[in-house]
Image 1: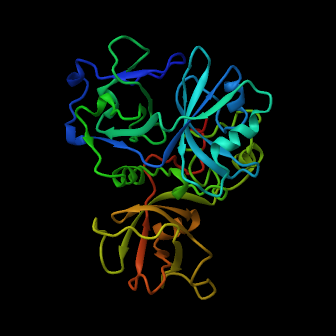
Image 2: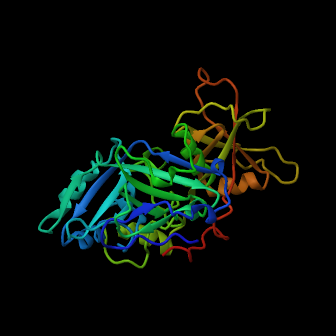
Length: 366
């Protein structure tokens, strides 16, 4: 059963169907619900709210929840967000789910208010009213449906299928103090690391630890492949560089999954979390099949380690060096201070199976 889209109107609410058992054969252990930390929610409402947001996000405003990004005028990422259409008191509006931690970027609510000018728009922080949840597992979307109001609902919940990657599951806004109705039959995540590991396995960066505000570029961060950019859209903040890169530029780096292990040892789930934003360096392997005498032992900077849990992580990597690893010409290592980790840490990239082939195929980008 497909999950219907959230319609524009009253905030959609989710309830567990009485015949839920017939929708999925997955066991409870195969479905996980996680309350996500460090997420804030802003409300943007008013008669001009749709036009207002359309001028400052990189995707066209839709009548159902969607993923997108706020960019700086220089085309760098400020905030990656989910936007949920939701009419309040008869006025069109939207809820924005974003990383609420402080960073180099201007606070999102401050940035939005600067753009209001004469628009009939009201921006409020409603983070205390909503929590952000994620649900994933085998056919997680088949165990509930979205409805548009009705007397049977006991909890206010706004839901969206997470389309950033094929197996991401669903994303929910749930009233503070409540749990999603669909948590019946789900295992509650022990801590935030389960969701991070889920994202890593699906090659999905999220928030400022993976997509560094004021520094990251949207296509380096896979936002074109995750549906966060609309290259057919008209004017918006940060459009010029983004569209130019899409049409004429070359994407030299991408965020992708990596496994981490000490030299001489295989990957282990007991691997500790390694420092965020540690540099990754490629080194050329000795080869008897080609003349490497005039080639540098260490190519230029390779990349940066991002979120990582239990020996798996995401890393921003130079694609030509990933090619070199796959061809057996290079190896990748973490550049760690010797007083912290004396052993050599190996980095092994893995291209996600859902990425297009060839990688620069952008037909999926809408």
